[in-house]
Length: 263
Image 1: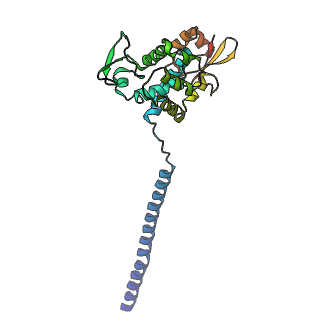
Image 2: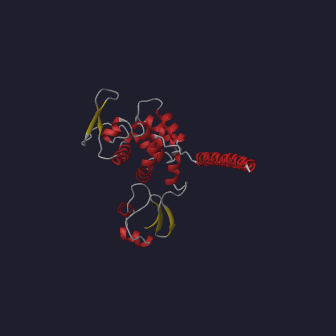
Image 3: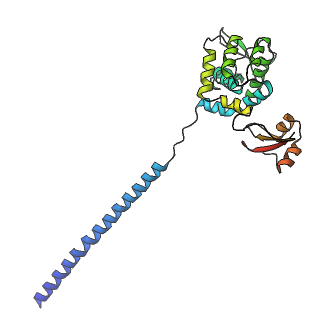
C-alpha cells in the first residue's frame, strides 16, 4: 500500500512537470510573436507615410501673388512672369523690410508720391519709398509706374511673352542700377517656370484664365481674391447674371472653380 502511494505521487509530480513548462513556453512564444507582429505593423505604417516637402518662401510668394500678376498682365500688358520675378527679387520673396512694413514689393521710391511714405537705406541713407495699405496696391502701382513713364514705352513694343527682352529692357530703361538685374530676373523666371503664367493669360497654357466658349459667353477659372462682384465689374455684367448662368445659390466662390460669364 505504501509502495502504491509512492508510485501515485511520482506520477502526479511527473505530470505536473510535463504540463507546466510546456504551457508556459507556448505563452512566451505567443507573447513574443505578438510583439514581432506589432513591430512589423508599425514598421509598415512608417514606410507608408508620405513626406510632403514644405513650400519655400519663394514658392509661397508665387502661390500668393500669381493671380494678381496675371490680372495686371491682362490690364497693363506687362508679362506676369516679369512682374512676379521683380516682386520676388525686390521684396526678398515678401520678407524684406519695405514689403513687410510698407507693402512695397517693387522698391518704388517716392518720386513725387503724395501718399504714405516709408524711409529705408538704399543707394543712400534714409531714402523715401512709397508705402501702401495692401500688397495688391503695390502691384497696381507697379503697372502704372511702367505704363505712365515715357522711358519704359519701348517695353510695350516687345512681345508679351518675351521675358528675356523685357528683363533686358527694364535695365536699359534705368529701372535698376544692378548690372546683373536682367540675368537675375531671367534666372528666377526659368527656375520657377514663371513663364507659364504668361502662357495662361495668352491662352497658350492650361486654360487657367479666360477662354471664349461661344458667342456671348466666357469661361473663367476662379483665382485667389476673386469675388462675384469683382468679376461682374471687370466684365461689365451683374452678379445675378453670373449666378443665373452658373446655377449658383450663394455668392461663395472656390479657388479653381469654373464659371461661365455672360459677355
